[in-house]
Length: 412
Image 1 (cartoon, rainbow, N blue to C red):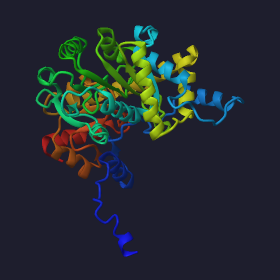
Image 2: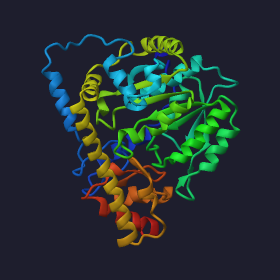
Image 3: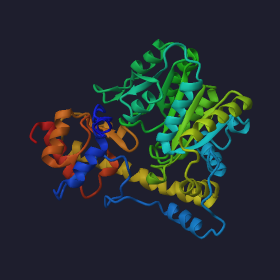
Image 4: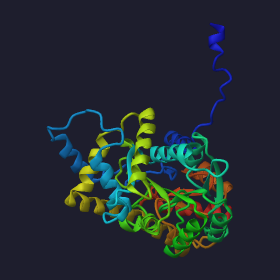
């Protein structure tokens, strides 16, 4: 018995996830004006989760469908969902889809897509040397753990320049050029997490040029299609351009944010191959990997999205709902920028607030200033100064701006 009790004594205690720890601290704080700017989920102007009207409508249609059952989906997912998801990210007129070169698999949201994509590459990519993936500095923190868990070591490439609070384009391209040929680079398709800084269309062209020249592999993560600009097609433009140029790639797709289906875990992985035969081979192996991990993906969220994406009327309503969410976030950026620059005249240049895109913004403040905001003003944000714009609303934005101003001035 004593020996059995000691079996796990040597297991190190892992630290809690930083974002979930932040959310827990916020929830336990009794301060009436507390603000949560750490959570990566949309909130309406009343700081409430928003169920998209089109999702309510699609859910009702499913509830009233007497033909539905709870049988297993195929291992690679609901076909009407995966085919529509591929068209959403690659374009309905994509030659890659028409030619049968796309292997699409339903996944456990974007995290599952990243994991399955990383696992597939770890097994089948022709690595020249050690298994490494290049991740932007910074990136979504979970990328590091996902790749390490499948035996691929992350290496950071320059991305964010704190001096300009913008893209370190020269550093990024320099890393693409200096990396060994056929390296794997993870790219954020739009609304870069956590900085909100995206390359321009011209910069994407240069990035594609160098990737082709060096024969690199593009591992796209697309968690925010529609959330960056409010336009699904515009936010997919980088991925579609890379496919058009013939860049070898895969893309991870999530419907957590743009459909508000956070808990349903709806996602997809699309691997674009050179031929239909190659795509068939890839999908056969993705199916084997998926079978050993989850057997079959969940059906409810996939059915909701299949209904929405395949029905023209529901699809148009979804696009309007996306514009509602993206528009509110854009409006919060404008209001915060106006408060800081015109009313409070906060020291420094705050144009990055309106130049950045998507749910997150890198404020450019220091860890000490972030800590002061959390400890003294009850404003919860990550130590690197990242804030979720969705956490701001008409009722708390002035409180946040005034305390941000005090933190910058050293008065908090």
